[in-house]
Amino acid sequence: MNYRKVGKWGLMISELGLGTWLTFGNQLNLAEARKVVHLAFESGITFFDTAEAYNRGVAESLLGHILKDFNRMDYVVSTKIFWWGERHRNQEGLSKKHLIEGTRASLKRLQLDYVDILYCHRPDPQVPMEEVISGIEYILDHGLALYWGTSEWSVEEIKEATKLAREIGIMPPIVEQPRYNMLSRDKVEKEFLPLYEDPGIGLTTFSPLASGILTGKYNDGIPPGSRLDRYPWLREWLEKEGVFSKQTIKKLKALKDIADSLDATMSQLAIAWVLKNEHVSSVILGVSSLEQLEENLKAVEIKEKLSTDVMREIDEILSK
Image 1: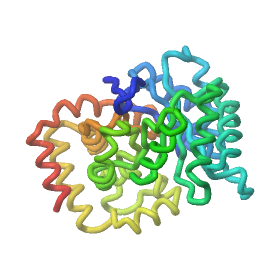
Image 2 (image 1 turned 45 degrees about the horizontal axis):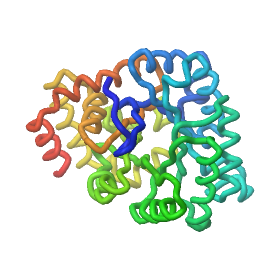
Image 3 (image 1 turned 180 degrees about the vertical axis):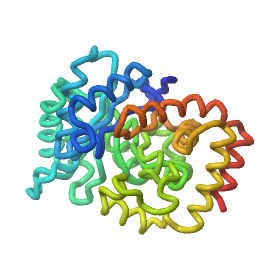
């Protein structure tokens, strides 16, 4: 396992991270989640990601119980604020009130004094950026988080936040958490290019397998019991994105040939491909079993097999 800086900043995180969305409290109970976290930690993963929205705080609570098994200085943990699930306006979004109260509630569930990274989980068009930055200032000044970042923000929004943060003398966002995989590339590879040098953001990317599409298991339909079978809303969203098209299936079959030539699974190839991007600080994994984690961990080995020629061949397949 390698460790990478978050952009230009001093914080180091493992190149693979462990996420908790749709798994902790849904597919994994406390005992199962503990086994997964321990295996991840023993394998070199020191970055753990969650959010107030994940299973309405249950994911944070489970992760908090498990992290007590480790020395606080040995891991990096992040959470995200935006949705709590209540309809009351003050219990969602990026108002100063919810940023502060939501962060305190997350810390209580995590049983921590602070998180290493606090993300604004989405942009909030209903709240002036000045208010968002004011809330972040309070959180940083009171030691509730050491760093902050954004998730699924635009370049313009990140630039505005950076400008305002610098004007009042606080640290700008150091990290963005976008979706990034072989089928979703433009934001990371094109739109964000101006941000890598200034403010020097890093990326903690999610969905390296495109919700399982890149494993190839959906090439012939939706298997019973699979993630897309359990979550129809996710399947419908992916269908709108066109990931079940004949063209995409053709690409997946060509990628399978490359994976076979490298003695890798499709999952390992897809994760390794993301790891080859120098702007990616960590790839967040979402696993529902020890076996899945063990398979995904081997992506760090496959990464070393992705030569310039292999990467060019993959790009040619994806560009068709």
